[in-house]
Image (cartoon, rainbow, N blue to C red; front, side):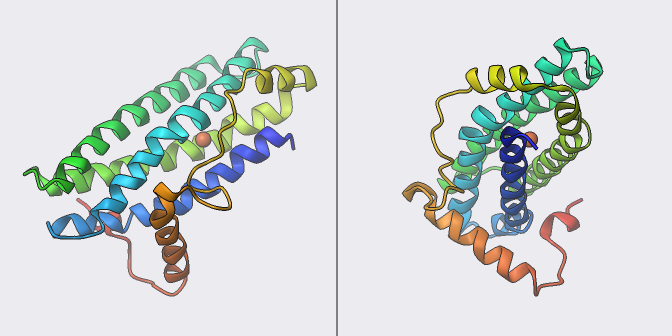
Length: 198
Ligand SMILES: [Fe+2]
């Protein structure tokens, strides 16, 4: 498998560990004094500043290259790009709402919690869509010259601030919370908050 596909797959695994945490966290919104609302702000801050500007654009480049090779249904590419655009916009909206909640502004916490769950489900669906359609098509149809071009188009490679071996200071608490969640969920059979959401 080409290293670009390996990297995208590894980023999906990391994202799933963050989503596992997010699926439990909206219950904290019910308590206005919940100290961990900062974790939700950090999670959306990460999602809108790294996956939305590095991971999704790279996948869009794969899709465009497959389109040029006539190796993917144009409707899939249009859907993928629409998913990325929607996730980007919804992530920014959620970040704004969560920052407001952290400042104590009155807003519908129930609505914010539901929107977090919807966002999580959209991102999970987006990753499944890519793993079923995009990555296999890229593995089948792209040649060495395609991959060289895709990598040459790459943005300057700032490391992932959350999942690099030593997380950036800004995201240390979030990284520790993800690791705690992963350890706890192995022994906790209770459903995540998002599974109860209306
Ligand atoms: Fe992806």
